[in-house]
Length: 284
Image 1 (cartoon, rainbow, N blue to C red):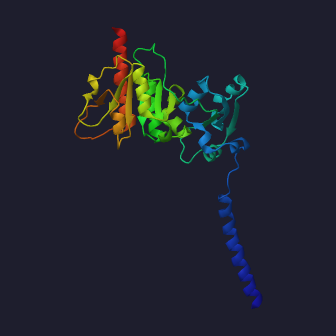
Image 2: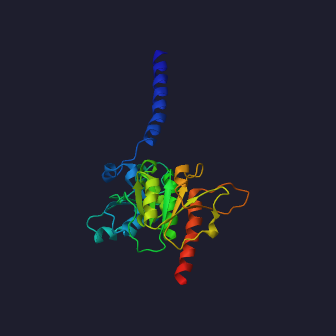
């Protein structure tokens, strides 16, 4: 009787362990390529458009291109053309582990030296109808990236932000910019009001944006001269001391069904109007 009881206990224990082992095996962490361990997730640029724009930018010093195995043939020639760029092929799980959570990478990521960030406004007086976007307390990297995309699409070559309110230039920002990060000069300044005063001295007309009734409607704005457009966050807008240093305010005509627009949408509308005005100005 005792022997039968021990046999039953062993059978139960063996059965329990046989169910436990596969569970542990399922949670085994995937081994990743050793080159991926050298960098932090925030160091990567990812997404097809953002990565390709960085690869095409002669100002970038590209170091490591990471592609999933299914895309290896598409990018392998880059290693042969640039002996300073290393191209590695990894599994989808490896690239997922290397990047920030929920990063939409499209199977490609890049490690590159950071672009230069400038600290003073442009001094060139030769461009007659240049436009500069100034962001006041816009801290979300996706919004800033979307504004950079609009800038690149509509011929704005300069974006100014206050350094203590500017988001870091990460892969998330580069992905939202869809290549615009490589085409627009970023300037981080200490004081926006002082920067606006300097730009006025360099013959720029400074417009602030407003969601209220004050100011002129966007179609009435004259962008034939050198212009600065100051934009604030969707909730708070531009600060009063910055608004008081603008030459005028402009507002986007909207139906009564909505009170405001996201800054990425608003910047696209305003810059589209600027670009259309520029084309008309050049045609006359």
